[in-house]
Image (cartoon, rainbow, N blue to C red):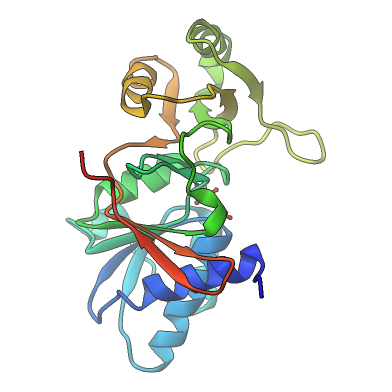
Length: 231
Ligand code: 5RP
C-alpha cells in the first residue's frame, strides 16, 4: 500500500508533536506539513499538554488562534525550546530549500532563535542535491532590478513569483519573492554566503547547518528520521 503525500506529511507532523513537552516555547512553521504539526499539537493540548509558540506567518498565527494555541511574539521570548517547520528540499547534510510558502524570512529568524530545529516533510523532499525546487529569494521592492541583475550574474534564471490570478506575490513583510533556478546547488553554504552579501535581498531560502533532524512520513506508512550526514 502506498499512502499519499498529505498523509505522509500528517505522519511527520504527528511524530514532531510527540517530541514536544509541557512548558515548551515553540517556533511554529508554515505550510501544509507544519499545519499538520499544529493540529497534532492542538490534539495533545486537549489531553493536557501546555505549550505556546511563535508563528512564522500570519496564516500559521491564524491557525494557532483558531485551535487555541497561545501565540507569542519574539519580544516575549529569549530563546525557543524547539522550532518545527517544513521544507521544499533537503539534501543529505540537511541543507534545506525553504520558502515555497513565501515565509522563509520569518522561518529563518524563528529557527535561529530555537535551541533545536526539526524539519518535517513527506518522503519526496530528501534529494541528493538541492535546486530542482527553485530557490525562493525575498527581495525589497525598491531593489528588485538590481537584485535580478546580481542573481543573473551568479548564473540563476529568475522569475518574480505571481499568484494564479497573475498578481505579484507579496510576503507578510511586504516584499517580493523571486524564484531563482540555480540547479544544481553543489555547495549550498557558498551560495548562501554570496546571497547574504547582496544588498536588497531580505532573505533567501537556503537554510544551511540549522536542522537537527528531518522527520519524514514515507509512502509505505513508516516514519523515517534522518540526521545530517557525518563529515
Ligand atoms: C514555507 C515553507 C514550507 O515549509 C515549505 O514550502 C514546505 O511546504 P509544505 O509543507 O506545504 O510542503 O518553507 O515558506
